[in-house]
Length: 288
Length: 349
Image: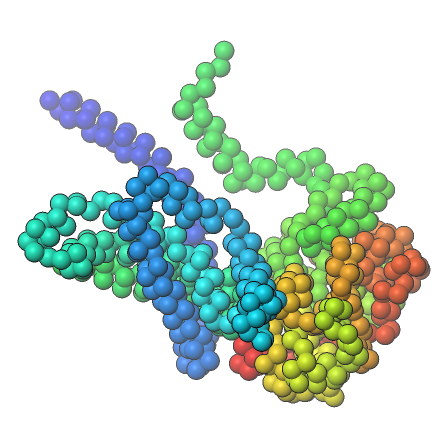
């Protein structure tokens, strides 16, 4: 009997060891190339200029200087606006994809994913071709149709930066929502309608709450990516002053790596706080 | 017969990983003679560096050289992270970063004993990086314009500011995201408008006057796109890049060195203290008159060897360095971060 227990234990032990061996490389990789660099980055933000002492000066500046507070707020507001627009555009598209597209669903998915196959830089330059002062849209409005006397200023405005970000990020929202919509039991919606609920009420009280997980996942993805977005804002301008742009500036122009570390730590904390809030919101929605 | 099992694969993978982690791979390479690792910017720069400097270096020494692409902030950070064993042996630097590296004691002194061709480089270029490197190539940041939409381009910075402020043109200026903006724009315009390194108010006042008619470029390609798409009619840009676009078919582009003198944007070369000694042979090729002539022909930029004779095509395009405004790089490096902070607060990104 004891021998059988020992054998089972040793088999379990061997299986556990094998499991550890399998997961080990991934854990080591994460620790070496994610956790340790993050830790090192955070430590650098607390180092004095000579690297010998400890200081909170950079965080004090980031959290008390009105200019830097404005930058942090602008980063969060921009990400939130982009997330909300993506949700507003993405939900109907996802709904159409799952419920209405039928045999065209493959094509819709392809159209959604196709832009992701092109470099983000190329896509962003595309907006310049379309909306520049002498771009296609302005040429059409001014020269071809004669509707305007002077070209519209579209580039380098906040609107074009938001449009560019939404264009890049909306597929993430659509795919997240579509996956959840697909899993909703249609009989629940039919039951609501049999019990007298109209189509709008059924959507509001059954479909929407049941798809909250998808909206939440999409919102988290979009918010996180928008929060750290850099290329689109650099190329399209728009006058936004966000933390990623400042981090790049600290590295590339002023070479103040410690300040860049402090900014990236603040950005990370904002992202984690928003992630926590969004997860709580989604769970509460799901629970209700 | 060898059987290839999953266990064997895992074991081999683990062994290879351990060997790499312990530095076995670098040792294997070193055993065969480490190649020299030099640097270049991307695009036409890379090819020019390969053709004009790497090829003659390899032909003369029999050694091999690899070319790392990137930018000065990245290369300097790499050397700072590992000064005992720098991962790059020759750095291409902006003068302000070259000075930072020099003052940190990270770079070797340049002398004629080590680099015979240094004798043909004007001393001012070596002095500008306190002797720990020298300038081998330069561009002048002046007024680039679209000839189809700007019949009479401004001849000076002052005229440029007045006409842009009046709404005659939309101008494209380098943004603060571009590393040399403090030199090529803030200092150059402040100097031209009566200020200088101690007083950049004239520049910020000028931007405030022009602000409704400005767009900003984050990288050189942005500037070309601004002009090509009609987003702007003219702007502050480099002579060499303008002529490169011209040669590639953008014959509607023109360049003017403003009357006050556009800023001289130098490109320095340096050798980290513990870099491969073969770097001296390579650097001597970089400073060689014949190689620099070839480099200038490809890049449309001025070079610093006094024995270089430009071709008839190139001669009218190259602004002699004496006709450009020579920036006080050392003083600019000291106040650069204040200017950047002021730009962030007054102009924005």
